[in-house]
Length: 503
Image (cartoon, rainbow, N blue to C red; front, side):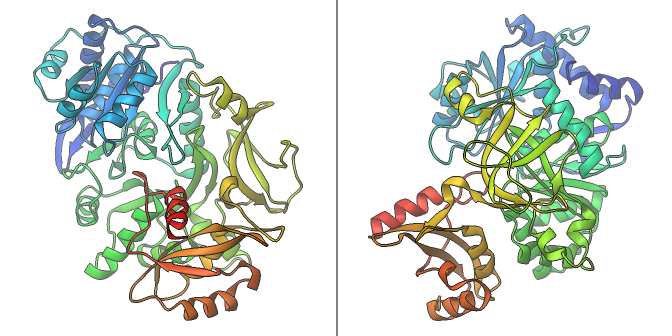
């Protein structure tokens, strides 16, 4: 089934229901949203787009994004969303690798992209876009099979060129239905607010909100601005957002500084990186029970595990801190296991590689059989993340397997050390990596962002009071900021390079 049928059904049932907003201004109801998508779909087909072709989306968070996305799906094409923060040459590489036939780009991005690639670039809001909106609408959705490519998602590429994850129509449907079962309900009077990049988790979450006829609000800033978010939440009410942990931390800091209560925020789903216990505890204390955590990868989008609203909020359960430090329990559409180096399942409590399988798992990487064979083993997705599952089914992430520190034959998980450092009142951010050591193999070092001048002795004493002596950092390096990619993930590869330059 073509997932764009969900838009057609909502438009058929509730054509007058508000759909697309730019800030406080409604720019389309569901009937208009659907009509525009079908007109652009007809135009795409007139341009030679055929079922299975790839159409790029190099766009900021604007209402035209969803129109272009559903138009491509209606025409039978797959979308290739590209983070608007990427350089035009990086976008060019993705389009070339995907074999994209055409790319929609928003203002400020189209000219740079046109100079960098031969792919036909269409400026949303430009003359060609207006011709597409005036084209005869496609009479019906182009049929697609559940296993057909729907979304070609390029990983963030922290260790080299990104890989294209093939996301099918079945995968998106499974993700959405699992969301209703395991993450949150969606109602027609809800609001999806897109403050994180729509090329990533925030955008992929549009489908369940389209199915339920909710509003879709695109901030005038076209991105993340804390004051703007609070204002739009108060205005629209019942706001859903997807946030990276760094966004949650910033929202909490700004709200406490300005007296914002978060009125109008209904659900903040966080994921995409480690959310430290101290940070989420502070966020819940300020905003209340609005948070749900998910753990997923592009290879199994947004639906490996979920930590429920009640688990995030509960402070009465004997194991509440351990559960809050976890990423929750398996979502309904996946099997979850911990495996050894050969992929054999391990018992509860053992640390190993996190494995998932089910209808939400990718069929493979785009034109990359070697990487596909490495990631998929006997139907299991080998996530590359290390973790353990307790007797109650809660999964706790340790680290990426490549980030594990082995010192004197003992495994040390950087996140444990980072969690300890972040409970020190002077520490704003921390990232821990291994440093080559002639005797122990590796030792532990920490890069720390502090509120004032760093006191290494105080940090060392703090670690000794909270974690085992062998886990504590052997060196501390103060930095103004941690290097991060466009999704807010700390680039430990950059820290390793920095460490090499310092030695």
